[in-house]
Length: 360
Ligand code: IPM
Ligand code: MG
Image (cartoon, rainbow, N blue to C red; front, side, top):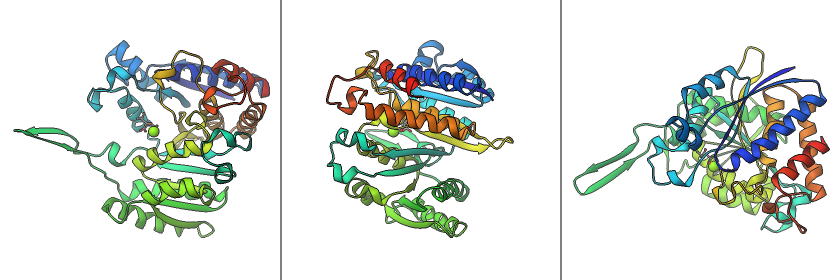
């Protein structure tokens, strides 16, 4: 198969983890005789520095031409006090919207060999295996009106949380379909005791559930969900939620997995005529400026995202399973980065990447 890929390393540790993820991809391609075309583009802070904008038109063009896009991380501390419109993050939000990748799949697993990495008690996290399905192109991240207005001495800030029936339907269908090949349970998360938006969310999800009679559906309020994730994570199979709740809950999920560096994600959108998903693949973590350039970052979230790309964008299930199996094997071997608190000396980003290639 021919794999035509855009890589957007972005900022901070994004460049380091994507380098390892691409090395793994090259390794997989060589082993299974796939040809690779990899183009690199600018996104985030690095794009602002080089072109003045976080999502340059050239990157938009490259993303439209690629079969799949792999992103590292965006964000630089020097933009901390800048308006949202001019920040590196705006580039990521822009490319998600451009590609129309409305469903962000974030698997959260507590690997048996990694239970001690989590600050939570082993008996709580053991056996955790869920996937968060986060709506990604709507909600308060994109709603208008938005902005800050000053009126005399007073200042007012507005953001708008908005969803339409069709936006909720399509991401709900994605969650129910995924549940079909898992433990057949969807938990929908909302704040319907306060927000009209969540009332619509709950109503539409309940309606979509009727199309999937073999899947069990329950609803939970987001505050309670935050608590249950820590108290009883095994109760969750597929967690379906809107954009901002999903952003927050997936960082909490990272504590179950031992480190945010562990979490991969697949952002998928409409299906192409070939049947493959349009996909943007990104680790859940950020650019971590505090450890950038030190060869310390955990590349497994980025490498797992390559596995997801092989599966969803290219339908290469065998190759995707090989990447997942390699991650498990390397975790068992103890060759992991400092964030996972290994008992011995931690491995570097590069060493973990090399170990994954060897295991593949
Ligand atoms: C994530 C990140 C992004 C988000 C930021 C970098 C814009 O936190 O992917 O979880 O909020 O979606
Ligand atoms: Mg986040």
